[in-house]
Length: 107
Image (tube, rainbow, N blue to C red; front, side):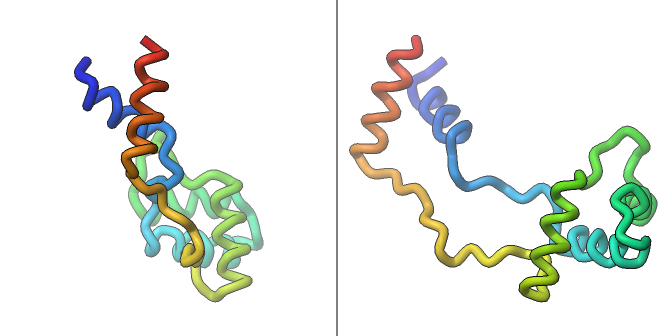
């Protein structure tokens, strides 16, 4: 494995910024289904699976995700959390050197 590839893997593994798995439309549907189905998580997951034509054993939003989306919606009127104050990691020379040293110690 090259050093650059290893460095990328370390950055990706320990990155503080993660990609969202579910779209805004899917989140909005889940929140609406939650309220429509009497606050039932299982019924919400079943409705989600049926609406988006997801295979029986494929992944659907978990209990905690649905609850988080509902609470965010109740608080802000949106299913997307406001992340204006989140600091993104910077790739400074010092950070790159620290990761390189830690990667070399693992080998």
